[in-house]
Length: 241
Ligand code: ZN
Image (cartoon, rainbow, N blue to C red):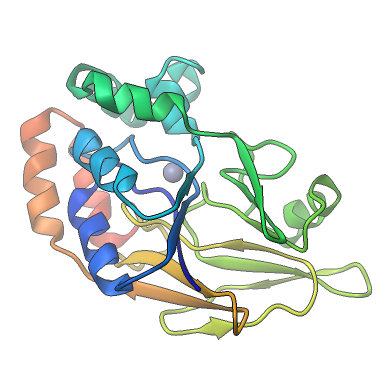
């Protein structure tokens, strides 16, 4: 069975469509949070997401902010401004979908959270040290996370140390012990590679394939400029920050 694992779409329809096309036919889709925030297409991205086969979907911090579950005061000015603009765009059907998003899902031998197992909404796992502190907070072999926008794997060794891998496009990884894995971001890649990121999990081979795909950044830029969302949300897409 092929599972498409994706995160942090951030209302970028062009990137999302490119990922779906590159992923090809899949049996199920697991989404790790933040379908909204930053970009110009919140309703279109929610519509695309809800149409995916056997969908499991999490709530991210931007989704929670748009629903007023958390305060936008915790966001920087430009991120908060994007949420304000999107609040005026969002249709009732989109709100209904966001309301159903979950904070944590356990499926097969995997736990799915947006930020971290111990703090699903806010914590960023960017280092071996933070990853290590989280292995006691989930019971499954692996944990899938989003939130940092950086494709990464944190592997717990038998000695109790955590090794960090930063996979590139085309890298295929097979787990042997416990791990935390981040597929990277569809709609706002941040590790100086502007291509949209995603992962395909093949559960028969038990391999995770990391992929990057180019998309039409110019088209998203133009929609951001028209929407009233701060220009910085467009310029950062070109460099991947
Ligand atoms: Zn995000």
